Length: 543
Image 1 (cartoon, rainbow, N blue to C red):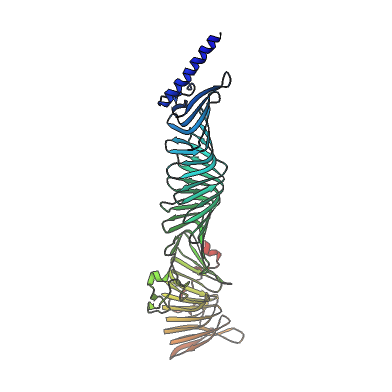
Image 2: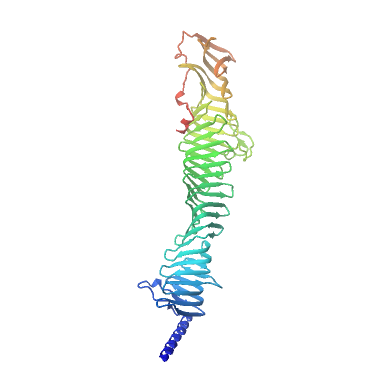
C-alpha cells in the first residue's frame, strides 16, 4: 500500500514538472475543460516565467496558480498579469499586477488595473485599483470598473474621468460602449475643454467623432462669456456643428436667444419655432418663426411672421413684416459713410464700429409699425439706430391719432424712441379726420410735420400746396369750408385738433358756406382715407 502511494505521488510530481516545462516553452495548456460546443470560452495559458501549480480544494474544485509574466487567451482577447488563480468550479480567474498592471487586450480596447476578477463563461470582468481603459482615442480612469467582454460594455459607479486630447470629462457613474465608442456619463457630470465647460446630470460622448450629446438639462459656458442651457442636442468638436432642443436658451453678453430648436453651423446660428432674440444693449426684441444670426458680423435675419419690438419706458414700438434684417452700419456703408438724416443720399460721418448705435434694420413686405401714439405701414423700411429715422418706401402711410400722412416716401424721425418729425416726399398728402366723412386735407410736393410728446404739433406743406379745412365757431359748429391753393401752407394744432392755418405765399381760394357744400364733395384729388390698413393694436402685430 505504501509503495502504491509513493508511486502515485511520483507520477503527480512528474506531471507538474511536465506542465511547467510545456508552458515555459509556449505550449498551449487548457485551464480546465472547455465548454461543450464553444471553444471561445476556454482560457489558454500562453506563457509564464515562474511557476504553474495546481491545488485541489475538494472533489469539485481545483485551483490553477500561475506566476511570472503570465499571458492568457480567451478567443481573441489576451490577458497579461504578474500572477493569477483559476477556479474550475466557479469558472473564474483572479489576476494581480505588481511590477506591471493587469492588462486586457480586447481588439480595439485596452484595459489596465491592479486587480481583476474574471468570469470566464459570462466573459465578465471586475477590475479595481487604478483602472484605465483606452480605445486609442480617449482614456478612461476610474477606481473600479465592470466590463462585459461579450457586449464590450464597461460600467463604473465610483467616479471616473475620460481624457480625449484636451477634453476632460468626469462623472460619478458611467457606461462605456466600446463598439460604438460612446460613453454615457451620469451624476455630477463635468466636461472641461479649452473652449468651453459643461455641467449636467447626464451626457453622451463619442471618443471617435468627438461628439457630445445632451440628454438632460445641461449648462454650457464658453471662453467668450456665452452661456447655453439646453435639455437635448449635440456638439461636434471637429466640425463645430451644434444643435440644441427642447426650448434651449443662449445668453451672449447683451444678447439672449430662445427657440424650440437652435442649430450652430460655423458662424451661423439658426433659431426655429417661436424664436426670440433679445438685445438689451439696443433695447430691442426680435420674434419670428425662424431667426438666423451671424456670430461674426452680428447680422440677424428673421422670417415667418417676424416682429421687432423696440423697448420704451411706456410706449414700445412694434414692427412687423414678411422679413426683418439687422446688421452693423459700418458693414453696410463702411466706417466713414453712415446714413444721416438727409434726402440727398449718404453723407460722410465717421463712426466707431463698436458704438452701440452702429446698427440698422430693414423690413421687407407688408411692413407695419405700431405704438400707442403712432402707426405706419409700407412695402419696405430702413431704420438706423445712429439717426433714429424710419424710412418707409412704396405707398407708405403714417397715422398719429386722427391724422394720416401719405407720400411716395416717408421719413419718420424719432427722439428717445418717440416721433419727432415726419417728412413725406412726392405726392405728400395729410388728412385730419374730424367726423364721419368730414376731413381737413392738405397736399403738396413735400409735407413736414412736427410732434411734441408724441402728438402732432404743426405741419408745413411746400410746393403746389392745396388745402381743404373746416371753419368752426366758438361752439365747435361747422360754419364754412376753406378751399385754397398756395406755395407754402403752415398748419398748427392744439390738443391734437387743427387750430390755425397760415398761408406763407400768395393764396387763391374760396370759403364755402357750410350749407353750400356737402362733406362728400370736399375732397382733394387723390384723396384716400386708409383706416383699413392701419394697425389697431400691438396684439394684431403678432398675427
